[in-house]
Image 1 (cartoon, rainbow, N blue to C red):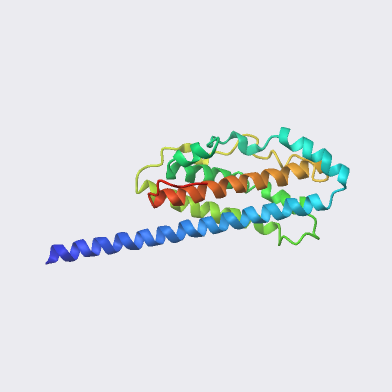
Image 2: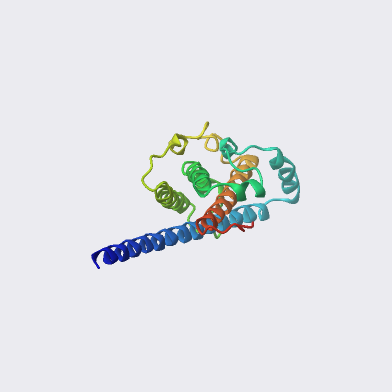
Length: 206
């Protein structure tokens, strides 16, 4: 009888942890979706404020441009993303979000006060909250095992890459916003697939 009670208690504890973990995952996906939508609106509003000639020039420049997050090892396509483990996707997402904590402070100087995107200064806080949530998910995934990936806490090369650019430079302002949108889209994709991996669903389509 006592053994049955202990087994039942163990099952209830595991179910509680699974439920908490699912809430954390759902919360992380919602937060990164919001950041991606915010990034998309910021760059759309920025482009709408440009003259036609300025828009044409920038459309030719960015495909050849470089984002700081290019240093982060990440899946190169849909197939590789779908084959990646939940832990790998969480770690990449952690690095992507963390890479914007410092540069996001520049967004307040890049985005015009007339744009209805909320307070740009809050973006840094949103990124920090999301990064903390992903960190908790990584620890839960490790389940008490040591974290063998020391890269999680390492700064990116040239972590002040965006901060060294002139805020009044049209090209660099566009690059900042475009890279932010690109990285938030990547993070959203990886977290959605990681959440799917958690459910052991082999059909985590993108």
